Length: 300
Image (cartoon, rainbow, N blue to C red; front, side):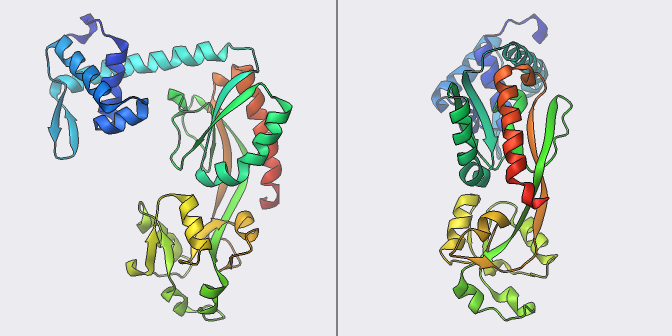
């Protein structure tokens, strides 16, 4: 079938595109902010309109049929064009008042940004902030956020980034856990309980092993992918956990397990190049850059 001769309903085409990229109706519905039955009806309507099956259910969820694969290239191009149009239109806005979406990790969103956003609110009361707290990088190209705070430098050519500082993180534990550890620290320290992660815990273990903590799986007495929950479990004395040094040092319930850092890196402020032509985005971007540079200045 020549897809170039077919006229699509964009809502149905977008439902197909996101479902193909997410791999399931439930994940796609969540990404689009619609109900799963609504999304399913949109995909089914597109299949009926084209008189062809676009998906088949496999062992790993929905899998594209041959026709679905052929269609995906065209719909993806439509999506990129729609995103570019939206970005270009938004970039022409000249009013400071209105909504802006800022993406940051859970820890940054909960502990770093509130005081900064309070200053922003006082200086620009017409700006309304939608704060996306997620440990996954937001897709700025698709307008998941206007501005993102990341711990890595983006490589996409249509994104602009400004380094605003450096972060350091180390291990913390309650005094009771520390009391059971030998001093000075030896290999026996590896017998202590740790808080781990549900995803990528092997990478976490590898990083800790480089610092001498050669841990076994059974030593992770609790795991979570939420960094906020990870920190609360650490504060509660469940096990040894990880936290940025400036936040951990400010918490009276815990102490450092090690004096030096275990993890570290750069902090970047990121936006789409076209959105930087938007006065509101540009204003907030520059405001955040100044405030975050001041916040992370002691880490330099």
